[in-house]
Image 1 (cartoon, rainbow, N blue to C red):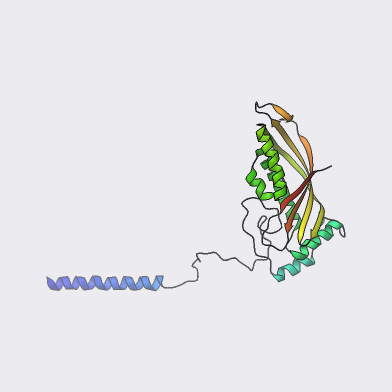
Image 2: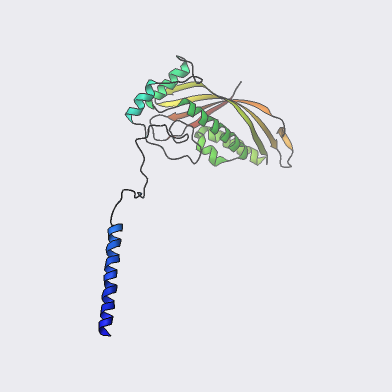
Length: 242
């Protein structure tokens, strides 16, 4: 009986040793297909980053963190070829202003900037109508934001509400570019069609219309300090357009 027990024990011990050896031989090897716990940035990519991830657009709240600047090999290619057709006439003041921006930040793309400005314009108009101070503070300079908030405060004190619906944004055109002391200011002329109405505490329309579509021209200026890691352009001035 004892001999049988000893033989059985030895067999199980041998099997256990074999299983442990097999596990160590498999788990202890690296095949080259393991995933790192942190995904590294692929610095070999040459295509431009997805819209909203570069440093040349008007950022909306929740945008991703700043991307690293392009390497010198990339900037050399981008500064040699500047196709700004539809953005600025060659030799114009606007083209010269854009050139000044590109000299500091070669990855700047005016078309991407305009797309970002369109998004920011709609976001700001809607945020102002809703009294969304948080969104406004992320997109406006302090001075402009204070003016917007004063209007919102006065409106709320009168217990008024504003309803604004975007019908279309038909135009977003760069009309001026100015760079001084590495601070760039880009002025954009917008032309939108909106339905907007102001209601009093009783819900009656006191200004505008809840049905009529109106054409709204605006001229807004966005600014940003070039060469910094902050990618955000802020609205620094507004005026009614023609």
